[in-house]
Image (cartoon, rainbow, N blue to C red):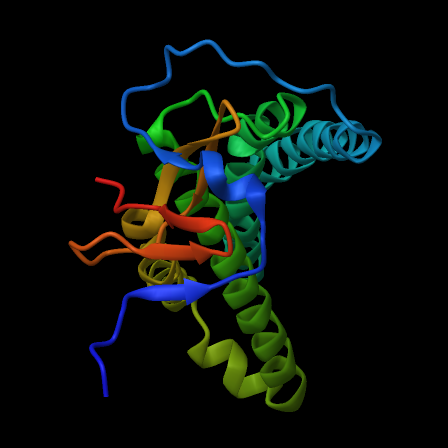
Length: 213
C-alpha cells in the first residue's frame, strides 16, 4: 500500500481557488459585490432585533435591580444579562452582513465576537433549563423548595452556569480565524491545527489551503 496523502477529493469548485490565509491584510482595498435581497433582509432583521433586545433587556435589568432579590428574579436577571450581552455585539454581525460578509474588525475581535455569541447561547439554554426545573420543583414540593432554594444558592448556580457556558464557548478562541476570499476578509472556523498545510485536490490541479498562523 502506498504512502497516504493529506488530500481530499472535491468537485470542481473553482470559487475556492482564491482562498489565501491572512494576518495583516486588513489595509488592502476590497471590492464588495452588491448586496442580495437575503443579505438586506437579514441585516434589517438583525438591526430590529438588536434595537428591541437592547431596550427590552436593558429595561428588565434596570427593573430587577430595584426589586427584592429572590430566586426567580436572580434567574431572570442573569437571563436578561446574557441576552443584553448578545445584542451589544450584534452590530458587528450586522456590519459583517451589510458589507457582503467582509470582516473589518480584525482577527481578535472575530474570536471574541463568536465567543460571546456562543456564551449567550449556552448560558440562555442552561438558565431556561434551571428555571423550568425550579418551577417544577416549586409546584411538586412547595414547602421544601422555599426552604432549600435560597438567593445565595441561586447566585452560586448562576456562576456555575456562566463558567460552564464559557468553557463550552472557549473553542472559538482557538478555532475562529480570518482569511481572504475573493478580495474579502472572512471570519470562519479554522480547524487545521496541524503544522502541515492541508491539500485540496481539484480536477484541474491542487490548491494549498495552508495553515493559518
